Amino acid sequence: MLIDTTVLDRLASYQDLAPLHQPNNLAPIRLAMEINPDVPQVACFDTAFHRGHPEHADCYALPRAFYDQGVRRYGFHGLSYEYVAERLGEIAPDAARGKVIVAHLGSGASMCALRDGQSIESTMGFTALDGLPMGTRPGQLDPGVVLYLISEKGMSAEAVSDLLYHDAGLKGLSGVSNDMRELLESNDKRASFAIDHFVHRCSLSAGMLAAALGGVDAFVFTAGVGENSAPIRARIAEGLAWLGAELDLAANEAGAALISTAASRVALHVVPTDEELMIARHTLALISAPNA
Image (cartoon, rainbow, N blue to C red; front, side, top):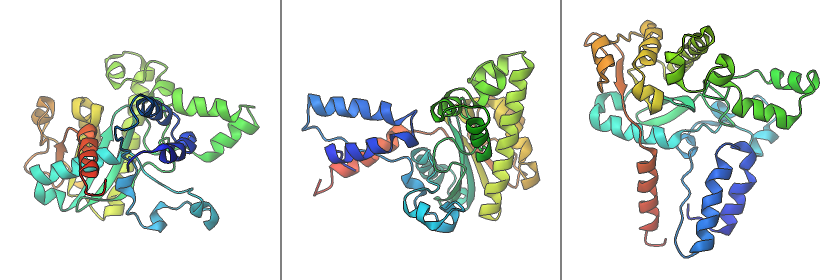
């Protein structure tokens, strides 16, 4: 979508849904528009890849009016999943046409179920707080916890927001760091505990997405942790054994693109993501269009 002042104002109105990202994204756009308003700018939405989900999958069990007002599951990391889906089609076309779970594991983390390269389910929902535990975000959380913190602990909505966006997740659990590399190197028991929780939640989410797909043909690791951490890949692959996944330990340690054994019923891939390239492709296609 080409950005003008109207689009920019609309994006600013959704700032509360993505307080970690939206302000930082919009500030340089405004500055560039002030410096040279004739240079086209394009917005690429990280939720767009998931928009084909059926309503029954993306709604919450709330009165319909809330869904109509935009309270629904959106999913995120869509640019990453879109790139991985295309790349997997190049390196493993048979797998790409089947049932695939992609794990975008970084400071922000989520998983997506793909069927024939299309998103059918995601672990993230209304905001980027949902799903897997992340560097500073808790992932799936009983909303009753938020109500309890406000009504019984006297926390303001702003304080709860700061907690959930900045002081939870791996950082909150470990008390050590939000960086998986530092947690893996630490001798602190709390660091190990945070890693155990992360792997456990990844395994549970993989089971949920496998159910949504009705089976799994391939599992893909991507993003900072997924691409670079052999120990985390190994532990998550262990949790996929019930699906028929069998890890090739040597290939995993070497950082190979295919890290499953020949006997594995689920292919395990490592596919580096490139969200920036995906943005560049969308931008070029839009500004090159005849009516742009």
